[in-house]
Image 1 (cartoon, helix red, strand yellow):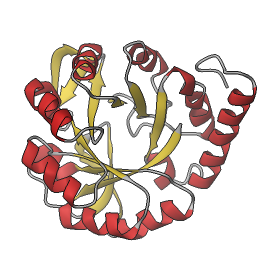
Image 2 (cartoon, rainbow, N blue to C red):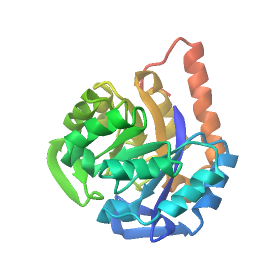
Image 3 (cartoon, rainbow, N blue to C red):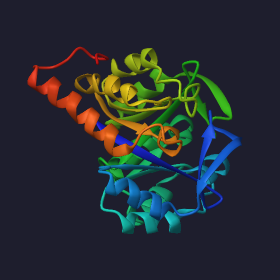
Length: 256
């Protein structure tokens, strides 16, 4: 399981939102390249970027900035926010992004997911954001009547191998992940990158206990920016859990 630091971009600034609300924004900087380099120096192996302008409006304007980040660091980047057609997927992948994340589009346009997996094999992820177990779209401003597990099964069946699962209620709250919801997603088959609620290294250690069950990564945002812990500390702790699990022949999922 990889510890994946997050960079959220809004109005060309690095920000964090509280439960996805655009009005509850905290600005942490104006130089994502510098922040990404800092994460790389601490040992990050993957970077999560969200273009919030794209997520809220469907039209991103941060691609040149994202390309600059891709050129500045060697670690692969996953990008979400406003990616809603094949042309945009091709555009972001050509900019140096390793994985394009479909969010709202995965819910509204099932055919797009199927075509994207065929055109760009192993380079398309789906981000499923859930509010009270239901899929939330359009930058979380709309909650649908579709269970998150149903959408996960649908995209897995057409070729999506890895899903980023965010529990909206915990995102930015530093209250810990929603483990019960995560366990329900893990029963379906795809690998899961857990997102939302991580506040301590202990949270990451507990998530690492789910690695054998399919948790491939954990996204960390506000906890890093508010200096709850250092990224290198978290990566070391997770690696220790994974090594102990391997040496012990596997752990019970969720164990510490």
